[in-house]
Image 1 (tube, rainbow, N blue to C red):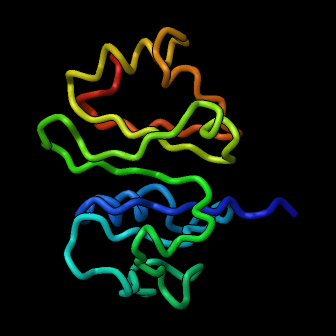
Image 2 (cartoon, one colour):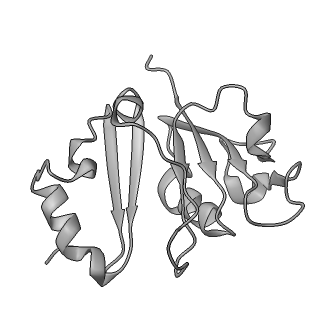
Length: 147
């Protein structure tokens, strides 16, 4: 039996919960071990409800402060849309990303369409095209999706 891929989803004022429901809820190959509390004040210590998380999470999913994670495993960062640069972010080396069992790359907005097309075509001048995790999922909104 293949072990579950353990994922921590970094908080982004609710977008993290949305992405969990759209991408990870109900997947038998992934275990979301926690959300991190980064943008909603005083949310750490709470639990994402089992009723929303699904039957795989009968106790819900804990929402932790990042410092509480002893071994975070691969992280999924969901930046808040519309923030002016510099964006708050979590940065990892390609070596770290490529050692992970699962990496999710989130792309949003028409201004990213050309770059995403280049990444998907394998243009290795772009760091995202050099991500070689065991599984790499690219999630793009309609505006960013190449034609």
